[in-house]
Length: 498
Image (cartoon, rainbow, N blue to C red; front, side, top):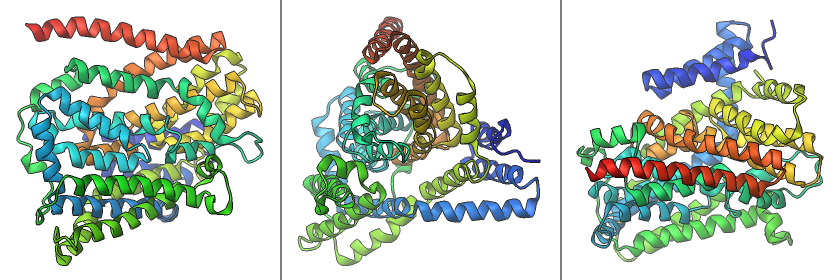
C-alpha cells in the first residue's frame, strides 16, 4: 500500500512534535518520528525502515556538512573569545554601562539585529556575549532565548545581505524568468510576521513585562542561580572588549565577502546577482575559518592566550556544539524522510493547494497558513520556501505582480512563524543553545507570543488579499498589534502598579 503524498505523511512530524511537547525529550522524540516515517515508507518492514533511516541520515549529513563545519568553527571561536577573557571584559563593561533590565534587553536585541548575516551565527553569538549581562538583571534564560530567536530569522528574512535572501532567491522554479533577489526585495515591506515580531519585541522590552506562559516562567525562575549553566571554559587571558568586537566584525565582513566570492563576484558578476547566486553555507565556512586565523594573529602575539590554550579551544568548541549538531542531524533526517524522494509531504500539500479552486484574493492568507503548518511539521523554513514558492508562481504567473509578491511574502511569513514555534526547528534549537535554556522551556514560552503575531499576520494577509494591496495588509496587521499592546499595557501595567 503506497502511503506517499497522502495525509499519512503528516503522521511522523506530528508524532515527533507531540512526543517532544509531552516528554520534553527532543532526541528520542525525533528518532521515534523518523522511524515512524521510515516504517510508513517501507510498508512497516522494520529492517528496511532502519536501513532507510540511516540512508537518509547519511545523505542529509552530506548535504549539510558545511553547516556542521560552520557550527564547529563557530564553537571554537566562541570558546576562544571566552577563554581569552574578552567575553568577561565585555560583560564587565556592559554591566557598568547598562543600568536597567530594559537596557540589557535592548542591548541584546540590537546585537541580534546587528548580526544579520545568518541566523545560526546570530543565535549562538548573541547568547554567549549577552548572558552575563542578562543574568545580572535577572532576565531568565527563556526570555533571553525569545529575544535571540525574535531577532534571528525575522531579521534575516528581511535583510537583503543574508543567507536567507539567497535561499529565497534560489527557491524559484528553474523555468522562471524572474530575478529571485528582486522578488525577495519586494516581499520585505509585506513580510508581516517578521516586521510585527520585531515591533512586538521592542514593545515587550520597553514595557518590561510579560504575559501568558512567559510571565509564569519569569515569576518561577527569575531568582534562579544561573551560574551553574555557564560554560566550563577556563579563562586564561586578559582580553579586552575589542578582542570580542573585532572577531565578530571580521566574521561578519568575511561571511559577506564569502557570499560575494561564491556568488561569482571575481568572474564579473554584479553584487546583487552574486548575493542571489551565492552558496551561503560554503560562505559561512570560509568566513569562520579565516576569522579563526585572524583571531590567532590577534591573540597569540599579544599573549592573550598561549598556543596550548588556543588549541584546547578546538576540542572545547566542538564539544559545546555536539548537542546542537545532534538535534540538527535528527531534524534534517525527519525532514528527509518527509521529502519528495520518500513520503512526499510536499506533494500532499501541493495537491491540497492545487485541488482547491479558491478565489485568488484568498491565496495570501491560505499560503500563510499552509506555510506555517508545513514549517511547524518539518522544522524547516527553507524547505517550506522550496515547496510553496514554485506553487505560488504557478498560480499567479511568472511575473512579479502584486498578488504574487504578497503570496510569496505570506509564504515567507508563515515559514518563519512555523519555524519559530516548532520544537524540531534548527533555529529554535540554536536559540535555546545560545541562551543555555532548556529547549522545551523556550518552545513553550515563545509559542503564545508567536501565535499572537501569527493571528495578526493572517488577518492582515486576508484583508490585503481581498484589497489586492500589500500596504493594506501591513496597515491592518500593525493596527491589530497596536490595539493588542494597548490593551495589554493597560491590563498588565495596572497589575504591576499594584
